[in-house]
Image 1 (spheres, helix red, strand yellow):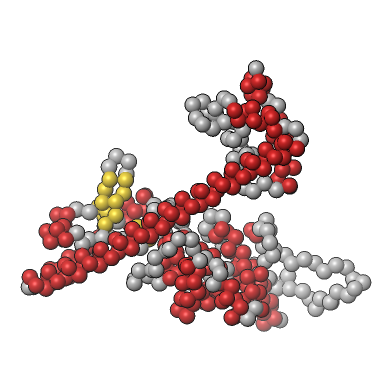
Image 2 (image 1 turned 135 degrees about the horizontal axis):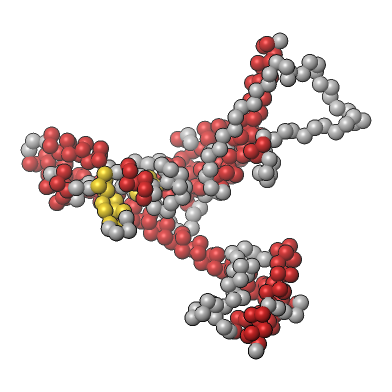
Length: 357
């Protein structure tokens, strides 16, 4: 009896683990939140005494699978990605992955152990390279000290590597994303008097700048600085030291140039996304005007757009700035039916009357 109870417990824990793995990607898309689910245990008293009968056509409906409470509000079917790996031939899955972007591969790697083992293996490097080439613009290949998944993690996961706070800042010298507060706790303030004069002249130490609000400070990795200092002082001849300094200067130059190109690409990506959202907002506004024309309310909207400006002194108007108009979301029939009455109320408000008068 005890052996059978143990098998039931293991089976139940395995099913719950599969549900947790299959749903983790949803949390990654909306905020990179870390959640855990406690294992459910089946006691000896809860064990069924008899084998359950299989339902027949005339029997009552089969009970639905019980979904763990933390995931009951999550939309979609559980376990689809897991079945993709198990049921679809590996060659087909790999072909699908090549059409994704690095951010998608990162999220997929967190959905199950099977997917993680596939995507994080060295043999999957070509998949990551193909995903990187799917991006708009020309993103530089990873530097020599980073592989493709590590590179994608730094580039596309917008969270501090220490506290998980959302942050856009990348410290390329330290190979990490880090918020201002964590950076001040982790790294030491750079003091040139702590190092030989040759370090200052050659500018070989990797440093980053932080704007604290009242001043800009320079930080560096203290352990790395101490290691470089020890290496330099261990060299006896001037020729050896000059050769060592030239090598470190070249390494720092390559890192700086690569970081600069990555920063420019990120700025290009952000700008392109802003333009894309702006076009969506313009099209949504035009679609709303077309639908207002069909129900006889376009004239009121044009009056509000003509004058006055909103807020005063700007080139914007109250209609264009309305919360239902300026959304970066395509207008559908369902969406129009949801906002139509509120738009009528807005257009017939005292604001319109004051404009007409």
